[in-house]
Length: 85
Ligand code: SF4
Image (cartoon, rainbow, N blue to C red):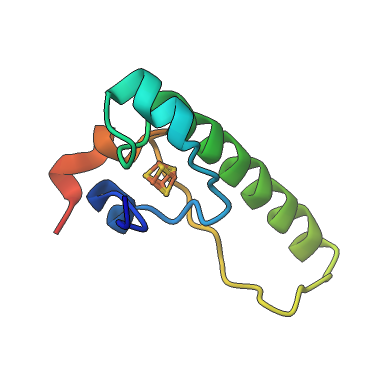
């Protein structure tokens, strides 16, 4: 109950993710393990943020923390597990 993130989250940069423990339990039978659905939602939001960042950069509008959001080819980090270090 005190684990603040699942081990898979160490390989993820969808920082806005809101893991719902009820949904975790319902879909994975574990309170701390996020469901595929939650990761997909978080990554769709992440990609939308990346698109917005690109549009702002094209207009030379920079946010204070303008760390580049890198392009990725997956919506759930578990689908990318072969590249984990
Ligand atoms: S999107 Fe998935 S892997 Fe990433 S932090 Fe959220 S629950 Fe963890």
